[in-house]
Image (cartoon, rainbow, N blue to C red; front, side):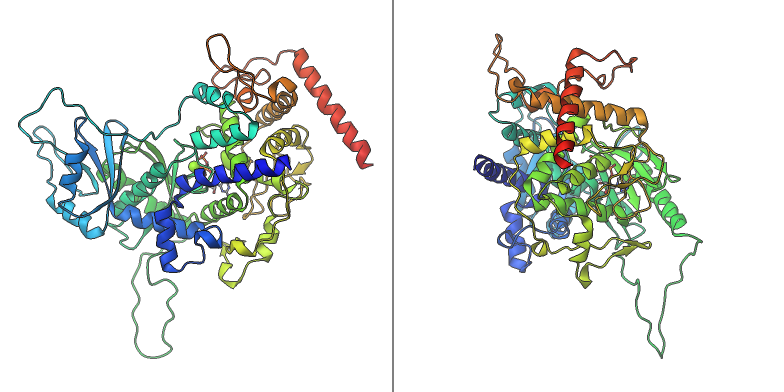
Length: 565
Ligand code: GTP
Ligand code: MG
């Protein structure tokens, strides 16, 4: 009973939080309702496709404007209203103050751009590429030195971990801590808008060659598991260009385009990204540090978009990643605990350097998310279904085969039946750590398609089957010392959550700072695995604390085995 009411509370809190971040705010819901989509609020969750279509439309009617620090919001809005109704605006700071402004129509944007001038610079030259990234100039002759900016800036980065630990320590239950962490770290409504706007600005560059192309965000920017400050993965979609797969008439005349031919699709992708990368580098306002990484398994162009502060990866022909994003989003929509748990584990992993923004032998966020999903499939009863079940529910419209890989799964959420599982987030968090503290990584592979571990056929330390390209291992990069660290941290965190003093709030200390407890203690520097940034030290002999932790886990497992047999 206690579990059920907590679950209900968590569900309500989470739904409020998530509405803010991905785009199910009321005005979006209304737009969809008016179109008669089956994905409206009362009919269940919306598909990622619909959410993205709305966000893209908003982005195309938006501009990004750098504002002088003493701008008056009132004056600024009055100036903008000369070109049309402003539907939404907000300010943020990134190398100066910027405003994101959404107009009621694209004509308003055209009108605004027509009024803008090309800057006259005395000692430099400019590339006259016009984009929707603008600078506001204040030509008023009278400047009051006392005039302060009244611009309310929305944060686009997370507070430091020390502040998060204090915030969590003030909460009253571990479930509240998990919800509080999600609220503090997840992408906000504004950050989500900014991500789609950057894609739309980039599309304007690519449109010089491919006017009908689309640039879509994928990965954690849209899968529901993104943290403020995460990178912006973008996919240049040329499938939206008309003319593919047009049926030729059986008789009479017809035309087709003459086009450059090459011997592989990979080569086409590399050529396109190479040219777009050059354009971004030479003409893209605000794009710096452009690197073309064309020989990677998935060729990409990497750069920093300074006005937004995003680290960007632009790929093309990366449809499987788009499908993985859709799948992760769907799992996150099925039960609010999925997203909360994934979010918490991602933050925990980052706090301990299990994951990193630098490529290497670390577990990636994607692999870690698949591990959480697998754990949730293994609950009794399962919290989410296996991918094969979602595949069996698919209708003809869901069919998707990409480069010979079956990427089909149901997109109509209402067809998915879930058994009732009322476990609390606290229980799931604690069991997640125990599950992986004792998982037989040396023998078994993690497989979310089957929802069951499979015998491992490869000699890699960690094997997680790629959900769609099933012959691939998404954690091939992980070496045994990184896996050992992960396991040691899971053991330690499982043990910490089992300690009675860690399971309830512990009040405030002498300096009025709350004493860390519950989830907050899991984010403190670890005693088993050396903290991020510290040089790797030779492993010290196990402390008494860890010895007793291992002992307690061993006893527990033995108890379970004897119950099973
Ligand atoms: P962060 O950027 O770390 O916040 O998480 P992310 O989920 O965005 O991961 P990342 O930027 O590394 O990758 C972006 C997306 O590409 C993921 O969400 C997946 O959809 C996909 N992806 C990443 N790694 C793999 C992989 O090894 N195999 C497959 N099939 N897809 C991957
Ligand atoms: Mg990413």
